[in-house]
Image (cartoon, rainbow, N blue to C red; front, side, top):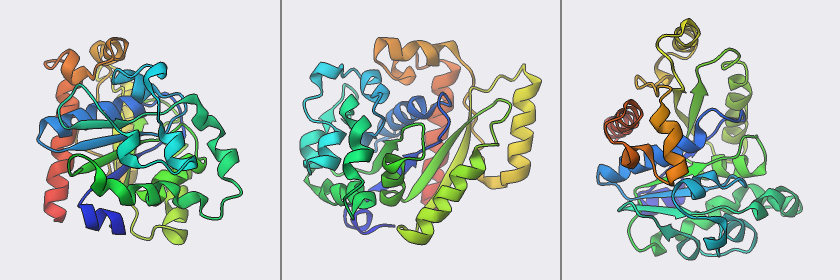
Length: 268
């Protein structure tokens, strides 16, 4: 675990996959909510210039006075950037479109891949002790995603249950290995969660079979189903767990949080 994690006992998980539309933001929002409901204090760091996690938690662009751009580029304090959400024990460091230029602005900085890790050394200044930091990464393996991996203890990979799903995974795992070899030797894979799963679909079952055969215990037992409630919830700026707690999607994310907490208690 990185130094700041030891100091604050926060566990930092980067949610990453260079493919778009695989459920990264949905997983970040709903896993964070499920962890908060279990009594953990959680901070979501929105590192995607699209800012979907910020919108999905009820923060329109005009309300994001300080953002993760200020955190990385202007050296703003994490406690100043972070906002309380409507969910108890859940905080958000929002993103704006300014973040889309961060790669270019960081390129000449010799410490460019360590910016987020440095920012998180100030987690102790947050109003509450943070148990979990979830970083919602952009759909690319750019400097923002590398920053997340350098700052993280582990990487959680949402994997869409569709043809070619496993094809891009090797590139992501290669990036994790490179970060481990160069900047963060203790980085590990938290696990791979299958998303948008349709039990009626032979293809979904085939993807699951292939994934479990190739990756074994790295695949979470919990599977996130394709569920209309999960799709509807962001338009109401709510996690699905709050929008419809009884839906299959809500139950799946609660199960994922439980599985992660159980894994961490076994490791501890």
